[in-house]
Length: 303
Image (cartoon, rainbow, N blue to C red):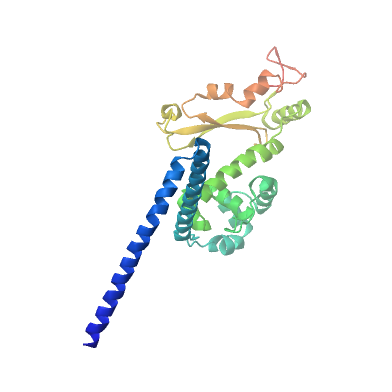
């Protein structure tokens, strides 16, 4: 019985609240009607001002809602996790550094002194700094990666596993090292010869090999490559292999003094010579001196 009494009392309270809200709405109707009549009788300028205020309030409300939506989306964003593959550079840190001088030269095709020389020369071009996210690959390791790739011809993935770096890092180290050597080291190691140096080379050739008025021997070699996507037929040589041509000139001691490369493998030796820097020097008469000699009844300059 007590439960029924409580339910009846709650129902009566609810009904009374509903009746009260209905009565309040009826009481407000005259005021609402009067306000509407007043707004209808307002001048146009007053109506425009009120509309502007309404639009401004509506715009601020929309901005607050959009901002709340953006904040909610921002709070729900997935946190980005930093990650990296587990790699080991134990071979470079422990094994390679313990090589003897002969082992080092057989592996990297350069002596330790030449390796240090190359590191010092290319340092401004390829050295990198550590960041807050990653530790950079040290300079000596970058040069070692490039030299190992050039010396062994191993694929990028194998070199990456050996040095504990990714395939992209190996490719980047190789290209940056080659560009730095061509730009910085090559002009210093193989400068343009002076006339007196050419005369000394010609005298050495005649003394060592009995060939007068000769300053060098020129030959070319084909370096195998993967067939390029465009103009791949131009790079196919006489053995049906894709390659680029390397042309070099050496003196009487077999030391290089002019090197150029990158010509398509399908080009002839004569075509490569005409397109090389050596031919440019010859056209400028930079390979000839004023000293001449008579050979078999003909006068020859230094060639």
